[in-house]
Length: 485
Image 1 (cartoon, rainbow, N blue to C red):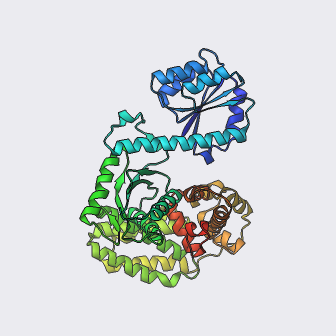
Image 2: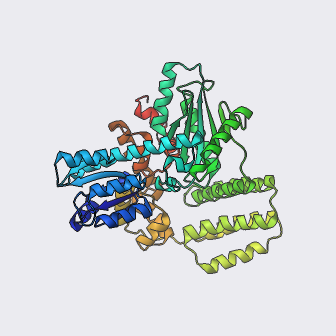
Image 3: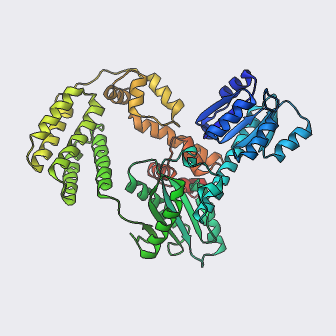
């Protein structure tokens, strides 16, 4: 989300930019205006989500700007920051649509609280507009900007229709409402029995995301019988205008029993290319896990056997199969051993010389044996305290091996091997542990929603967070939060 700060004092801009944790509020961009005219131009050009507005400024006052925003139907949520405590100013600003009025000098703790409430109001307003779109209103009728999803940090999404039987008891209705509010951020109540959930899709592996949603549904069925509550999942959407089509797909999946699975339905199969791409990501990740695990070597032949069985099932042509084998090998070897372009050329030549599936399978096995298990040099123990400290301080952020390698000037291979040698724990195992420990602390000591805790622990996908937590502790975050373990 985007916020615009409008004040004629540069010191106010500097103070606000540096004293508030904008990222925790979901703010990804800060715009600045130093007079009323500049502020109005930015409002018209970029339509930020939030506005911090001074009253007394050159060219136009804050009150003038609020009047212009009303005239041009600009619905940016506005918080007034002013040194003027005269009630007439407060009354006029609130009458013109300001969300709140805060006096200077600025209390950052109080302002943060106001912005949290403003963000909740913003999300509620979006959900109401989404409800209108689902019921036939156009985007223009809702006063939403076309790129509203990107403002919310959503690039793609799946639609989930939660259908509760009319025979459900009042207690079951309350249980459903509580569960959905804990686990999902964007819930649109259509009527007494239907809830539509806009589910951000952060991973390219769509079947895995659907499986994650199904796990969440199975957990819900521990509270409410599966014959009382049903889930249907649509294909991915990218625009707000896709919402009605996604809802129609969900309803069709329910009525025509697409992929029926004890109350869980998926609209239709995904394209062949999507399945192959998903499997490619899965298998190269599985091989990576084995190559970075001291006891993973013996698992490689079985994984390769399963992989080539998949190739056979999909009846891939030999050229496509060769490209996939190259991708799997090059991804893992370049990622772990930090190889150069000479290796890439040699690998392509070796694969081109293969004339059969058996030769490809043998090449993969032989290359892995040669590169990883025959005279692999052992790195000396490397001091990695700076990376260790960085992970402890930034675990809530999106962290990649590529980023760490560039930031600390160390090869990816040396980083992974060195970290395990230094701390007797794998890099990602360590990151997962501190994320899970922090999540447990928040679950047992705060009133934050599960999806909010997921975000604070480095997970943009609440379902993926729940599955990871369950595998780590043996029970779900919902059970932890409700003291059922």
